[in-house]
Image 1 (cartoon, rainbow, N blue to C red):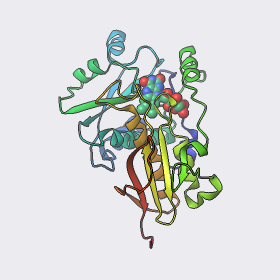
Image 2: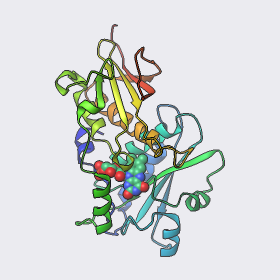
Image 3: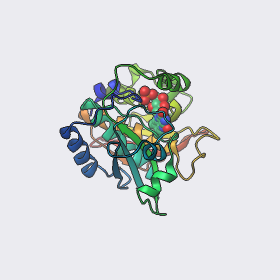
Image 4: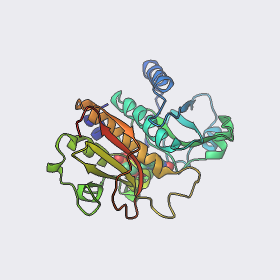
Length: 283
Ligand SMILES: Cc1cc2nc3c(=O)[nH]c(=O)nc-3n(C[C@H](O)[C@H](O)[C@H](O)COP(=O)(O)O)c2cc1C
């Protein structure tokens, strides 16, 4: 996946109703069955729900509150309730969402507005597992429904924070300019364009250019992020951002690894999550 696909992706909530072609369905299922382990080693279990053959009442019971129009399929993601499960889910599911985007399939992260308990029961989610998110899968309709337009306007979905709010040099009081980002400029832009719950964009990155280290921090929205505890949508957001960064760096030929490398600096209200460290760099 690459920056072009990332820039192209938008949440799709209004579909034509046409089921996925056999090729597309097979490709998605194969991807979901193989590319399903995150950087923190949690494995995501995906479940495909076909609307065809089910009653309208059944679908309403198991999915969203009417926010998705004419979606022919839903894909739900289950993860063991382990440390950093949310980040892994975000990472793995965003990889799948971008793969779907590259095939011309419409998706939308759903983490808030769905009937989690009914679906969890249907999918036999155990006490040791969590069901943080799902997405519809299908082909985008030519026009967005009224509900979709209202949701986009409500979340300010077209807007993203400027670089100066998100990326820093060495410490949180020194914003990183795009011109200073060097080879990481595209990867950071990919983070900036990432989808996030209610478009809150809670990711912050502090860069130590000498070490080739990119420290990822979470700026949690108080009172928002704990609503569905132990599920944290903002930790899912973090995993999504990690995938965007990783895949664009990888595409540019810079390989790195995720390591715990807590920087010696003032964190202010930010929570340290993980560091992407470039390989083969002399320090
Ligand atoms: C973890 C997560 C959960 C989300 N939950 C919902 C949801 O429950 N319902 C919904 O309509 N959109 C949901 N969204 C979509 C966001 O509102 C959307 O990504 C954001 O407004 C940016 O718009 P874009 O995806 O079109 O770029 C969610 C996004 C993420 C990343």
